[in-house]
Length: 326
Ligand code: NAD
Ligand code: LMR
Image (cartoon, rainbow, N blue to C red; front, side, top):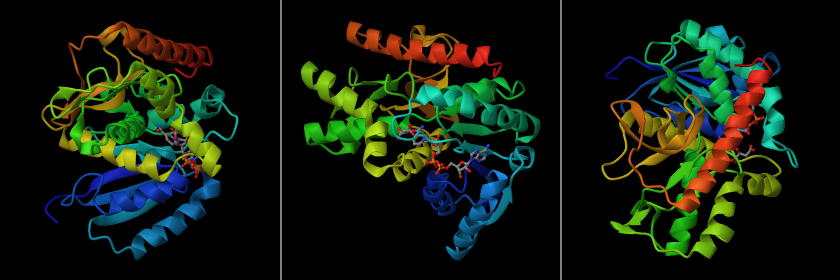
């Protein structure tokens, strides 16, 4: 091994996303094939035994890059010295439940986790929140970590981005790798706006009719999470784990020239998105930092969709503010 192991904390380690995620981290897909990792798993006390079972299986994988596994039920210990934190543990939405209903239930989890990150994480900490409502959970954690640069807190919309790539590739009959500059704007919820306004295939803008966009593409991508729950009886897990891997890998290793991806990051006021909320934007990554793509022209249709999703995020922020969670 060429370098010291990177500490990766995963919360909700015994859950279904955890089960799909941990083996991919251990196999080197999160950070790269030359980067050893130490896993720090956080669970609630009742699920520690199940996490121990997963750790036994991780041992049994004999992963060359896996330098150790520790299991905790205390956030302070789990985030001590950690470099990458994947905040997955939360209560998943079940059939018929709206994401907004989860705000109060999950808000309480992310405050102590933000405090623990502030108290003990490594100075290069990068945080990805997956647990829903992801954007606002990230805001809660970030607001309790005043000593950590705010831009280290992100929430996951890479799954939505990947869903949009998959739908558009089917429609156009091209590979997902040929599509550039798709973007997810706003909240990881049914109000999100998957935009093809700047999308390109082979350097040419994408030509799809507006009716397909409005009645098929946008609702399919935006409501995909609910469709998976309806079909599986459980929320998406392997695809969510895969997107979490993509999000961190890109954050650390960068985006390709001439392309971007999507991530929910702290708004600096770009595109009229109120400063401080954690909203999805088209982003590039370089030098271990995500940056919002600047200077894009936003057409009228896109403007209205972005504003609607951002309005939902502002409402969520106001709700958690009233609950004293930020
Ligand atoms: P799950 O119920 O299978 O697992 C959640 C795990 O979190 C459980 O093991 C539970 O014990 C644990 N947990 C609960 N509170 C905790 C705490 N305070 N600290 C540590 N662990 C805790 O759920 P899942 O299917 O793995 O989904 C996890 C979350 O990810 C859900 O909120 C789900 O809605 C969300 N999700 C987000 C996306 C996205 O794109 N952002 C996609 C899919 C799912
Ligand atoms: C998803 O997009 O698959 C999940 O966020 C759905 C959910 O509400 O758990």
